Image (cartoon, rainbow, N blue to C red):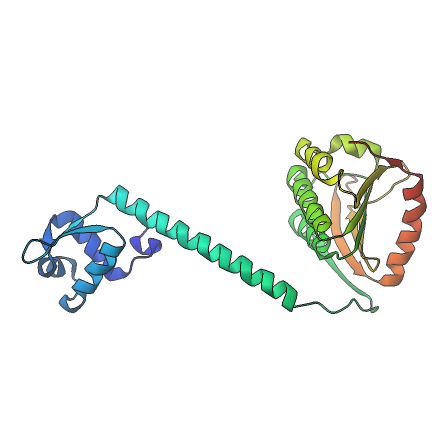
Length: 267
């Protein structure tokens, strides 16, 4: 059940405000008795909710009287305060992340082989986007099919947005697709490729029928491979991320001639 405490009020502050809604204009002493807020705390509580603009006071009267602001107005004021706090927190966290990114430099990739796998649409999509975000210098992406198990609009937008961020940090991107895949892309993704990615001098997209499978080479030492489902050709089973410089080099050797012979895609 929703509570005033969910909007930041203390238990005593919530009690005092609720009591004022039923009593009408009243003194601190009277309110203490009605709300069960101790007399030793009632003035601090009233001052606090008055700062929240939840009550109005009549200073001219002796003793001083208080009246509750109407609930809709009071709740909207609490909501605006929370929104302001969240905006400030967001800004603080963004600053912290920006500082830590420069401070927590990852070590250079080692030659030791390491692999991990993700199974299921959500996990595989997350792994692909994560590895694109980790690229520092180069991304070579091959796409031959769109798995039916993915939310193509969502995944396409996520990948396109991450590629855009990669370009902004200086990564070179080569995208090789089957021609028919171009028509299968969601309209929103097509617009992003056409208006944002394609004009970029570090982005190049080509098409070729000599493409099989879907994989992404990251920085010449890592390959993210989509594994097809053995029983359902249109679906993928998993995503494997393999960090192996030698294997990545072998994949690039196979990729290079197909890239050279591919047709540049005009958006």
